[in-house]
Image (cartoon, rainbow, N blue to C red; front, side):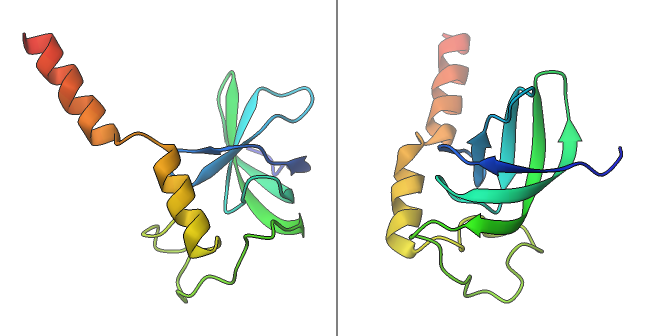
Length: 113
């Protein structure tokens, strides 16, 4: 895949530490290492028919909730996806999503019943 870069404004958070963007002429773009409401320069890292994945390579207009990640290997090991957000905002974003484990268990129990 050839290297494609673009500038996007991010929307709401989605599971896995991504935020959504909807660049003109493209479907949904899942952006890693950005926060909602930021303007970022991104590099595409994967593309499907109706969506694509990108990583933020430069933050052009940061969120007021953005902080320097406390972990020196943030972005490399994959263990923490939201350390670039202040802690209260991390909690808000975690609360935004239902507990997917419980949803999966309920789905299995419903199918077995």
